[in-house]
Image 1 (cartoon, helix red, strand yellow):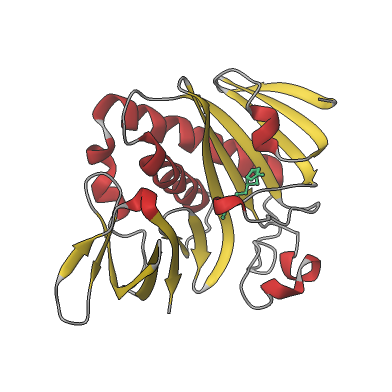
Image 2: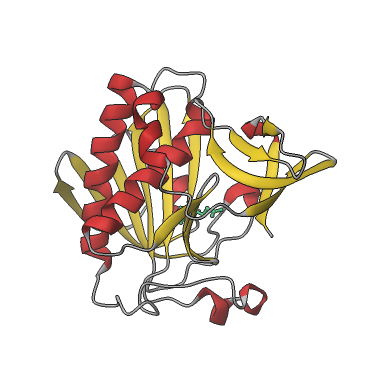
Length: 246
Ligand code: BTN
């Protein structure tokens, strides 16, 4: 990789590159507590291998963590990272951000960013974060019209990619230590306020679609919904293809 600059920050080593296919792919070769940050990505990826538009002006970074020894890492990692990002943004004064299960950072009905958690091996976990700052995904991809938002459009264009990164990495480190030392259960109360007002959702699992009101998560991060008949269902997260707010 052609690093522009490498700098230490609070236990992290941040590698800046001008362009990457996907920072998650570059980070997969690195050791824990390394971060790869790119000005733009040419093949940014989202959940379920969807294309992630990542032109200059956004925050595109991937942080490598030592994978905690838990069978639930895959389903809880994006949630833990989402919690860290919402906290970091809150500390910077960006308050209206909520989570949409499992990996979306939302402002009202629009997407501000997303998280892609991947495991290149059993020992490492990669948290890829994409955050719209000065970029406009809708200009790059008109099919996203009306679905996204950026910090600049929220009037927060003064927040630079560098300040955002350090706040996120700091929060990620704190939340990660809590997750490893005390378990996901210790973080559960923090999620309660993060989903925003209860919304009607459609959850697509294989050939089936479940509809109901999103109630939050269970002890291992699976989504819980209440159907129109009033019964509460826990949906096995790893099988969920898509959760759509209706
Ligand atoms: C999603 O909402 O589906 C997740 C989007 C994650 C995008 C980030 S940008 C940095 C990192 N590199 C990638 O290719 N994807 C993640």
